[in-house]
Length: 242
Image (cartoon, rainbow, N blue to C red; front, side):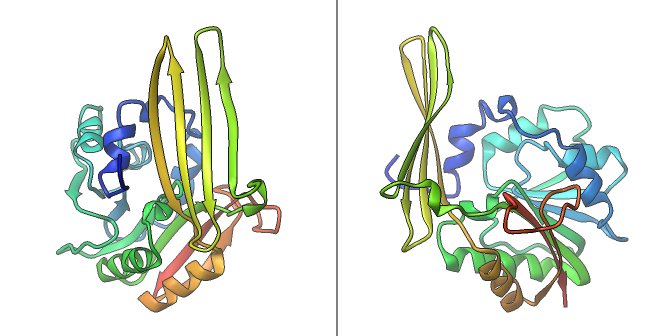
Protein backbone atom coordinates (compact mmCIF):
# COMPACT_ATOMS: atom_id res chain seq x y z
CA UNK A 1 0.00 0.00 0.00
CA UNK A 2 1.50 3.31 -1.08
CA UNK A 3 -1.22 5.63 0.18
CA UNK A 4 -4.46 5.59 2.11
CA UNK A 5 -7.72 6.13 0.28
CA UNK A 6 -11.42 5.75 0.97
CA UNK A 7 -11.42 2.04 0.02
CA UNK A 8 -8.32 0.98 1.96
CA UNK A 9 -9.95 0.17 5.28
CA UNK A 10 -12.71 -1.99 3.84
CA UNK A 11 -10.45 -3.90 1.48
CA UNK A 12 -7.93 -4.71 4.23
CA UNK A 13 -10.15 -5.17 7.29
CA UNK A 14 -13.47 -6.59 6.04
CA UNK A 15 -12.33 -10.22 6.34
CA UNK A 16 -11.57 -9.93 10.07
CA UNK A 17 -13.78 -6.99 11.07
CA UNK A 18 -16.61 -8.91 12.74
CA UNK A 19 -14.12 -11.04 14.66
CA UNK A 20 -12.46 -8.05 16.33
CA UNK A 21 -13.16 -7.39 20.04
CA UNK A 22 -15.55 -4.50 19.49
CA UNK A 23 -17.69 -3.45 22.46
CA UNK A 24 -21.11 -5.09 22.52
CA UNK A 25 -23.37 -2.59 20.69
CA UNK A 26 -26.37 -2.54 23.04
CA UNK A 27 -25.33 0.65 24.87
CA UNK A 28 -24.68 2.42 21.57
CA UNK A 29 -28.04 1.28 20.19
CA UNK A 30 -29.87 2.36 23.37
CA UNK A 31 -28.32 5.81 23.16
CA UNK A 32 -28.99 6.30 19.45
CA UNK A 33 -32.59 5.11 19.77
CA UNK A 34 -33.29 8.08 22.04
CA UNK A 35 -32.35 10.51 19.26
CA UNK A 36 -34.08 8.91 16.28
CA UNK A 37 -36.81 11.53 15.94
CA UNK A 38 -39.76 11.14 13.59
CA UNK A 39 -37.92 10.47 10.33
CA UNK A 40 -35.45 8.00 8.88
CA UNK A 41 -31.90 7.65 10.21
CA UNK A 42 -28.60 7.59 8.32
CA UNK A 43 -25.39 5.87 9.43
CA UNK A 44 -22.19 7.17 7.86
CA UNK A 45 -19.69 4.31 7.35
CA UNK A 46 -22.27 1.62 8.06
CA UNK A 47 -19.68 -1.13 7.60
CA UNK A 48 -20.95 -4.63 8.32
CA UNK A 49 -24.05 -3.35 10.15
CA UNK A 50 -22.80 -3.93 13.70
CA UNK A 51 -25.03 -1.11 14.98
CA UNK A 52 -27.46 -0.57 12.10
CA UNK A 53 -28.93 -4.08 12.18
CA UNK A 54 -29.83 -3.95 15.92
CA UNK A 55 -31.43 -0.53 15.31
CA UNK A 56 -33.43 -1.94 12.40
CA UNK A 57 -34.60 -4.79 14.66
CA UNK A 58 -36.10 -2.13 16.94
CA UNK A 59 -38.19 -0.81 14.08
CA UNK A 60 -35.96 2.14 13.20
CA UNK A 61 -35.98 3.03 9.50
CA UNK A 62 -32.26 3.20 8.82
CA UNK A 63 -30.10 3.72 5.75
CA UNK A 64 -26.33 3.74 5.45
CA UNK A 65 -23.39 5.01 3.47
CA UNK A 66 -20.20 3.09 2.83
CA UNK A 67 -17.60 3.16 0.10
CA UNK A 68 -16.38 -0.42 0.48
CA UNK A 69 -17.76 -3.24 -1.68
CA UNK A 70 -16.36 -5.73 0.82
CA UNK A 71 -18.01 -4.16 3.88
CA UNK A 72 -21.37 -3.87 2.11
CA UNK A 73 -21.15 -7.52 1.03
CA UNK A 74 -20.47 -8.56 4.64
CA UNK A 75 -23.55 -6.64 5.77
CA UNK A 76 -25.69 -8.22 3.05
CA UNK A 77 -24.68 -11.71 4.19
CA UNK A 78 -26.31 -11.17 7.60
CA UNK A 79 -29.84 -11.70 8.85
CA UNK A 80 -32.31 -8.83 9.35
CA UNK A 81 -30.54 -6.50 6.93
CA UNK A 82 -33.12 -6.66 4.14
CA UNK A 83 -34.82 -3.35 4.96
CA UNK A 84 -31.56 -1.37 5.22
CA UNK A 85 -30.83 0.76 2.15
CA UNK A 86 -27.09 1.25 1.60
CA UNK A 87 -25.72 4.04 -0.58
CA UNK A 88 -22.21 3.47 -1.91
CA UNK A 89 -20.48 6.81 -1.39
CA UNK A 90 -17.56 8.48 0.37
CA UNK A 91 -18.51 9.88 3.78
CA UNK A 92 -16.13 12.76 3.10
CA UNK A 93 -18.33 14.12 0.34
CA UNK A 94 -21.78 12.87 -0.56
CA UNK A 95 -25.23 14.01 -1.63
CA UNK A 96 -28.52 12.17 -1.17
CA UNK A 97 -32.06 13.00 -2.27
CA UNK A 98 -33.59 12.34 1.14
CA UNK A 99 -33.70 14.17 4.47
CA UNK A 100 -33.04 12.40 7.77
CA UNK A 101 -34.03 13.25 11.32
CA UNK A 102 -30.72 11.92 12.65
CA UNK A 103 -27.35 10.75 11.33
CA UNK A 104 -24.42 9.22 13.17
CA UNK A 105 -20.73 8.45 12.65
CA UNK A 106 -19.10 6.25 15.29
CA UNK A 107 -16.02 4.21 16.20
CA UNK A 108 -13.56 7.04 15.45
CA UNK A 109 -14.41 6.91 11.74
CA UNK A 110 -14.31 10.70 11.39
CA UNK A 111 -10.55 10.25 11.93
CA UNK A 112 -10.30 8.02 8.84
CA UNK A 113 -10.68 11.16 6.73
CA UNK A 114 -7.12 12.26 6.14
CA UNK A 115 -7.31 16.06 6.22
CA UNK A 116 -9.14 18.87 7.96
CA UNK A 117 -10.75 19.78 4.62
CA UNK A 118 -12.19 16.27 4.20
CA UNK A 119 -13.49 16.28 7.76
CA UNK A 120 -15.19 19.66 7.30
CA UNK A 121 -16.69 18.35 4.06
CA UNK A 122 -18.08 15.37 5.98
CA UNK A 123 -19.90 17.70 8.37
CA UNK A 124 -21.17 19.77 5.45
CA UNK A 125 -22.42 16.66 3.66
CA UNK A 126 -24.20 15.50 6.81
CA UNK A 127 -25.77 18.94 7.24
CA UNK A 128 -27.12 18.79 3.68
CA UNK A 129 -29.20 15.68 4.44
CA UNK A 130 -30.27 16.29 8.07
CA UNK A 131 -33.51 18.17 8.47
CA UNK A 132 -33.52 21.42 10.51
CA UNK A 133 -33.70 20.51 14.19
CA UNK A 134 -32.32 17.04 13.47
CA UNK A 135 -29.16 15.67 15.06
CA UNK A 136 -25.72 14.42 14.06
CA UNK A 137 -23.99 12.16 16.61
CA UNK A 138 -20.23 11.58 16.44
CA UNK A 139 -18.19 9.20 18.62
CA UNK A 140 -14.40 9.41 18.76
CA UNK A 141 -11.51 8.65 21.09
CA UNK A 142 -9.80 11.47 22.92
CA UNK A 143 -6.37 12.15 21.41
CA UNK A 144 -3.47 11.39 23.75
CA UNK A 145 -0.15 12.48 22.22
CA UNK A 146 1.61 11.73 25.53
CA UNK A 147 1.56 7.99 24.78
CA UNK A 148 4.06 8.51 21.96
CA UNK A 149 7.77 8.52 22.68
CA UNK A 150 9.74 10.29 19.97
CA UNK A 151 6.49 10.31 18.02
CA UNK A 152 6.20 6.52 17.83
CA UNK A 153 4.55 3.74 19.85
CA UNK A 154 4.55 -0.05 19.76
CA UNK A 155 2.51 -2.55 21.73
CA UNK A 156 2.02 -6.33 21.76
CA UNK A 157 -1.73 -7.01 21.89
CA UNK A 158 -1.60 -10.80 21.93
CA UNK A 159 1.02 -13.52 21.91
CA UNK A 160 1.01 -17.29 21.82
CA UNK A 161 3.07 -20.26 20.69
CA UNK A 162 2.28 -19.72 17.03
CA UNK A 163 1.05 -16.13 16.78
CA UNK A 164 1.70 -12.54 17.81
CA UNK A 165 -0.36 -9.38 17.26
CA UNK A 166 1.65 -6.16 17.31
CA UNK A 167 0.55 -2.57 16.82
CA UNK A 168 3.10 -0.02 15.56
CA UNK A 169 2.17 3.69 15.32
CA UNK A 170 3.91 6.77 13.97
CA UNK A 171 2.65 10.16 15.15
CA UNK A 172 3.00 13.53 13.41
CA UNK A 173 1.81 16.23 15.84
CA UNK A 174 2.13 18.93 13.18
CA UNK A 175 -0.64 17.35 11.09
CA UNK A 176 -2.43 15.43 13.90
CA UNK A 177 -1.92 12.22 11.95
CA UNK A 178 -1.30 8.72 13.27
CA UNK A 179 -0.06 6.10 10.85
CA UNK A 180 -1.14 2.88 12.54
CA UNK A 181 -0.22 -0.64 11.44
CA UNK A 182 -1.52 -3.84 13.03
CA UNK A 183 0.88 -6.70 12.33
CA UNK A 184 -0.54 -10.22 12.57
CA UNK A 185 2.06 -13.02 12.52
CA UNK A 186 0.54 -16.50 12.54
CA UNK A 187 1.96 -19.84 11.37
CA UNK A 188 4.85 -18.05 9.69
CA UNK A 189 2.56 -15.73 7.72
CA UNK A 190 2.61 -11.94 8.14
CA UNK A 191 -0.52 -9.86 7.47
CA UNK A 192 -0.74 -6.07 7.73
CA UNK A 193 -3.89 -4.16 8.70
CA UNK A 194 -3.35 -0.39 8.42
CA UNK A 195 -5.42 2.40 9.95
CA UNK A 196 -4.24 5.87 8.97
CA UNK A 197 -5.94 8.52 11.11
CA UNK A 198 -6.16 12.27 11.49
CA UNK A 199 -7.45 12.94 15.00
CA UNK A 200 -9.48 16.01 15.98
CA UNK A 201 -9.62 17.80 19.30
CA UNK A 202 -13.21 18.32 20.55
CA UNK A 203 -12.91 22.11 20.20
CA UNK A 204 -11.80 21.69 16.58
CA UNK A 205 -14.70 19.32 15.91
CA UNK A 206 -17.14 21.84 17.37
CA UNK A 207 -15.81 24.51 15.01
CA UNK A 208 -16.16 22.14 12.03
CA UNK A 209 -19.74 21.50 13.11
CA UNK A 210 -20.47 25.20 13.48
CA UNK A 211 -19.11 25.95 10.00
CA UNK A 212 -21.51 23.33 8.63
CA UNK A 213 -24.54 24.72 10.47
CA UNK A 214 -24.60 22.57 13.61
CA UNK A 215 -24.46 23.48 17.27
CA UNK A 216 -23.32 21.24 20.12
CA UNK A 217 -26.14 20.27 22.46
CA UNK A 218 -24.53 17.47 24.50
CA UNK A 219 -21.14 15.87 24.99
CA UNK A 220 -20.78 12.71 27.04
CA UNK A 221 -17.81 10.59 28.08
CA UNK A 222 -19.52 7.33 27.07
CA UNK A 223 -22.64 5.86 25.51
CA UNK A 224 -24.07 5.51 29.03
CA UNK A 225 -23.91 9.31 29.42
CA UNK A 226 -21.00 9.48 31.83
CA UNK A 227 -19.87 13.11 32.20
CA UNK A 228 -17.19 14.22 29.78
CA UNK A 229 -14.11 15.17 31.81
CA UNK A 230 -10.35 15.50 31.50
CA UNK A 231 -10.12 11.76 32.24
CA UNK A 232 -12.50 10.67 29.50
CA UNK A 233 -10.99 8.36 26.92
CA UNK A 234 -13.72 9.03 24.36
CA UNK A 235 -16.54 11.43 23.67
CA UNK A 236 -20.01 11.11 22.23
CA UNK A 237 -20.98 14.48 20.80
CA UNK A 238 -24.54 15.38 19.84
CA UNK A 239 -24.97 18.23 17.35
CA UNK A 240 -28.24 19.87 16.29
CA UNK A 241 -28.84 21.07 12.74
CA UNK A 242 -29.65 24.78 13.11
